[in-house]
Image 1 (spheres, rainbow, N blue to C red):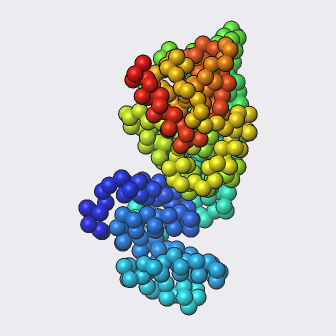
Image 2 (cartoon, one colour):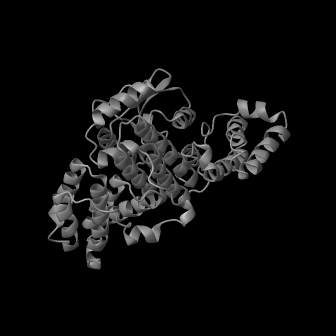
Image 3 (cartoon, rainbow, N blue to C red):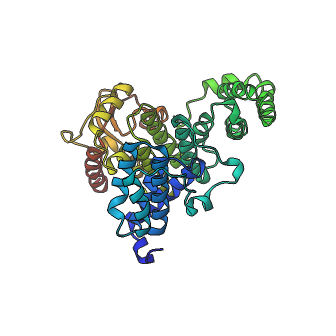
Length: 405
């Protein structure tokens, strides 16, 4: 174990967060090379040489067992620079150089200690299944802080698509079903009931959840449906724009949706997705007022294709990309919204055009946000996507003029 003094500071705190998340993922698939590589690097960064050695030996053993010369060379290149600092790696590096085939080594002790009970262990899985286990671990960590978060439960339920995943699927769908019932969302409940019906034969637990939804759909007063349909959209007439726990959950859910879509389209990598998810979750769980934005998270982590990504997001949402350097931002336009709201939500109303307001946003695909802004501003809005760096510059102008107003 390294000197405890080396484990402090913001950079090391981020690395410890990475270690915690990836060890959860590794518990479900102990042969995931990408995860092992990330853990090896993160443990080195915080001085955890013993754990780094365990992950390095595991990586080497997997490469040797594969018999793939290219994979062996890649692992040798990864491990060799650390041979002097971690002498325990020298043996496996020598085997890699010689191309010696060995039996698989057991997982490092740290991962074994943090693994779930044996019943939850799964054998090495194909890429698609490995990706699902990654998402399960990430979203599960969010649900630890927000156990009834609907968006996270929807993602978790969707990650169990096969009948042989019955018990896990049912657990996720049952929790989501309870959330839908409390929200009186009949349309979503009907869709969820159909999913549970398909699981009745493979997971007895589905019967209870399906019965709950059937009771809700059949017993609910007939008048409930028209009321739900004519009511304003959720968030469209907010009682308050304060940054409370409800808003924090809503904003995080929106940003998670955006990130998930980008990952599903192959526009961001699994590792980058995991890192930004962790960043946003940590920011949202604190009491500070800071911008919660998937685009900011990507920018912070040095995502090289951000400009092209902005164009794609704008095209998907049918909004142009804009910088506000040429606009004279006035309190008479943006002052209708609290400064904390502008900062946290990532929006800046910047111009009036007839009876409408032009608004720059960091998440143009959030229907909740659009409904909320038009209700809060009391007029129709036209939306524009603003790059995160330009938003930060414009927000400083807004803050200065907000104080002077």
